[in-house]
Image 1 (tube, rainbow, N blue to C red):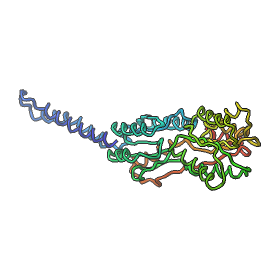
Image 2 (cartoon, rainbow, N blue to C red):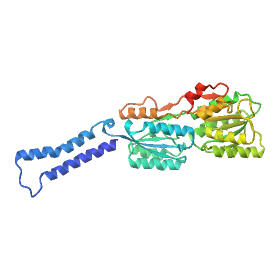
Image 3 (cartoon, rainbow, N blue to C red):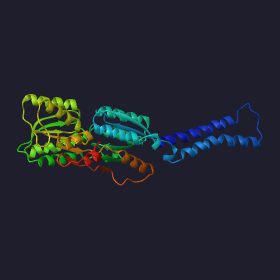
Image 4 (cartoon, rainbow, N blue to C red):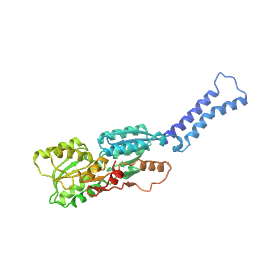
Length: 353
């Protein structure tokens, strides 16, 4: 927005120069004093109007230009809901000119950020595919006067490089899930661990709690592989474990889609799952269809991950545009976990995405 105002001021000055040149052509006869004054006033009007427009506050002078970098909206129901929420908020009607870029790869997201910087956005909104590697491009954004706000995921970068972050506590999500699993008091814990995209904040947080349980509480990893949030890949991994003849009694999937793929493999092999059955099924994100699986007791647990961050982002941008100081640097979304033995239809309706 500041760059746009500067451009208008330059345009105003340039308009004044052109008007001055046009007011006295070399071959023209001398004008009467009254005519000269009138011509001068008319020539100055465009410059004055441009200067007045440039001096208007950002919210009145034009649209706020935002570049939004997100993960693939087809990655999961969570991401689809997150993308839909952002697109509903960042519209011209709400005072924004928004551009979107999507990738599950960190290098592609960084390239998108560099392009948004070159385009001169006012704000860069980022949900990083990986927590590492962002310092350089965020420093470039800062040097260009572009403000960065994180959403959904944290990154490993100095806090001075971004204005705020609106995130889930992924580590707490994992801890809540593993504490629930410990509370099932199984004789043994033989776990198929289906990980999300490696290096992402969601993967690191949800994996960390299980890794701790393996190191300290006697949990056994039958396999630990990334299915990259994908149902088909998850099904293939679980099918390979079934084909190997290895014993397992827990599916710990780091999102609902991977849990769905795992269940497809169990069903194909006629292995029972859910409450009181052979295999405990755990997912994350609280898609409505996943919570319905809990309600039917076909799954056992689902951890909430709140996708609705657009209103928080809008509020922060409005405060920054008004020159206000933010109340807090990090906004943690409130989240919970659901147990198939206690979930209600009201929970499905209120929390399902």
